Length: 279
Image 1 (cartoon, rainbow, N blue to C red):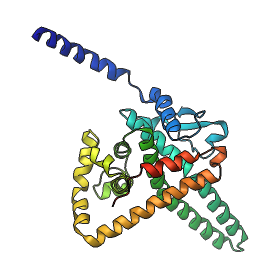
Image 2: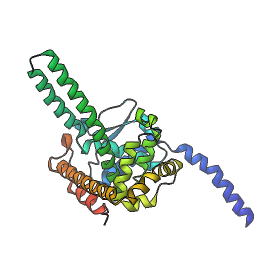
Image 3: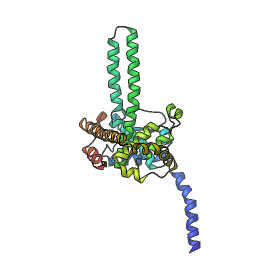
Image 4: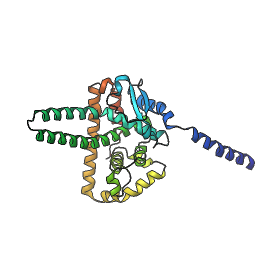
C-alpha cells in the first residue's frame, strides 16, 4: 500500500510540471472568452484576436472581433485572470467609453473652432484634453467593475481582476505613496465587490498577491467600519454605484449596443438577481 501511494505521489509530481507547462494564456482566450460571452448572453459569434499592440475596442465589433493585448495576458496565471482581462475589455464596450470620449472631443473641438483668438482656441483644446484624461480614469475604473459583474455571471472569481491589475505596472502616484500597483483601481473593485457581492469576497482568492493586498488595506477597512458616519457614506456611494451600473447596462440594451452589439435582457436580469444587496 505504501509503495502504491509513493508511486502515485511520484506520478503527480512528474505530471504537474508538464500540465503547467502546457497552460498558455493566449491559447485559453477563445475558450474563456466564449464562456464570458455566452453566460452573459453577449454575441457568441465574436472572435477574439490577440494583438501585440494596444487596440481600442470601440470599433472592433463592426467585424465581430474583440482585441486582447498580449502584454496584458502576460500578467495572468490561470483562467480566472484571463477572464479578468477579457471582461475588462468588454466593460469598456458596454460602458461605451470610447463613444463618450469621441462625443466630448467633437463638441469641444467645435467650440474651440468657434472662438476668434488663437489663444482662446488653445485654452479650449487644453481643457478638452484634461477633461478626456480625467474621464479616462473614471471610465477605466467603471469598466473594471462592469467586468467583475460579467466574470461573476460567467462563473469566474472576480477577485482575479484585483490580482491582475496588481501585477501590472503601477502609476507614479502609486510609487510616491508606496502603494500596491494600480491601487486606486483595485480598491475601487474591492469596495464594489465587498458591498454588492460579499460572499465572493468571503470566498477569497488563493494567491500571495491577493493576501498582500488584503494586508495592506486592512487598516483602512477597520477604520471605515469603526466610524459610523464614514461607513454610512461608503454604503450610500456603493448603492448608488450599483444603480448606475444597472442603468448603464439597461441603456446599452435599449440602444442595441455599441456598433450593432445586441445586449439582451438577460444581462440586466441576471446581473440584478446575482448582485447581493447588503442589508
